[in-house]
Image: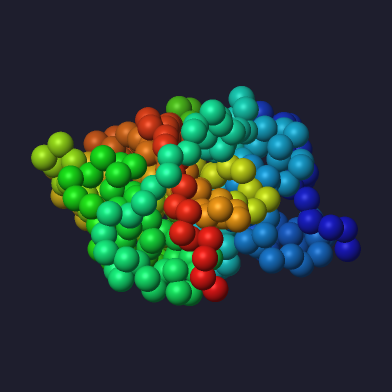
Length: 282
């Protein structure tokens, strides 16, 4: 059997002049085109531009995971774009030129000692440190120092996704959505809900915008109407001197008012901090 490829779907999009193709059950698509079995998330759960398959990059096409199909498999869709990079936040565009500031946590050493003891090496640990140390509160201009116990986890949600003016909203059906951190902070006298996606530097130098939009769409129906929902992209970079926290506060039109194209995520403020002590520990 030939290796997996999106080329049959891309050819159909060209022949029929389609901006959107799908939703389609992944295993059904693979079987119909005689492809070897492959783990669906590796090709349709895209976190970064670097993870996008070459045939999609070459044709400026984005793949989106769209939850469960009618056969209880995983379904996906393809979206044509003027520039596929519009579906991503690119680190070099956001953070290049920023001069990192040294950040020394203002609280007692004993409060942060557990992070130093075990070494803040995982994304979850680094997110929790950013909350507990006051770093994220400083970067986001919050009225208090420490963010206690941000909510994390994953669950399944159904919601509509918009990917173009001429394309009807697409249904994301009972699909898993992951939350790296969700917390409430006060700013300008108002309570805001912050939805954070974190990535530790590896081979990835970008973030797919739907990684911020999907959590917002999942939570929005249950968020009070007077509470602003703010997406945040956190990139952490570990090196010998400590850990650099790059924080990008973003905006996305409120889906409680009107559903907007997920590409409308934009960065409104970016900052960079280095915590020297985090180079120590396990």
